[in-house]
Image (cartoon, rainbow, N blue to C red; front, side, top):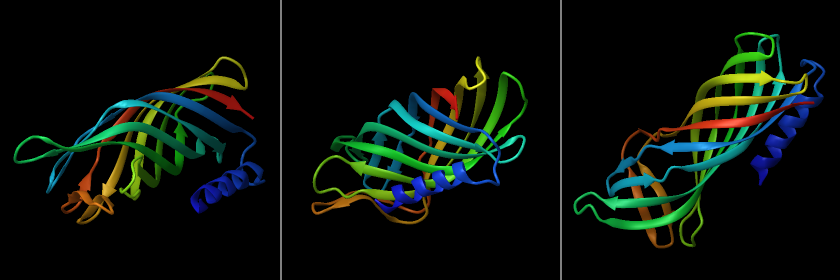
Length: 203
């Protein structure tokens, strides 16, 4: 996939760039993601909450500013409930993947470091059944947390975060050979948020 190659190239450029600071942090993490429902013309789309996981690459740009690249994944089930009869119209499994880049701002120095992070990017909705196409959407995240370094190059990162895919105009959410499962009317936000814990490794 071209997007994966672009992300890997960007990460390698950040790590090898002489204009950035000395430290690079890799943070594999896992957590639990909560999702709101999305109202459409065909009914309500319900996305189950579930365990999510991912990895973060942090490259220090200035004293308290860090360039952040993030990948996040949730494997879950989507249910479409008809509005008139309140009955399940269809249900299928889907992976929701976030590809994000942005900035992290550290509040203090030392072993305990509170931070805030903001990113922009895209989200891939990828159903795991035949006949329904994948869907890419613009998205952004905002959150904060704390990092604790119990060694010079090892620490933990605890974080809460909002993850928000944006639907700008009318269109199909999931479409395939058998038709569309839902139609978005006007602009809409799918609000998701998670609580995560990760291991910080300083390279």
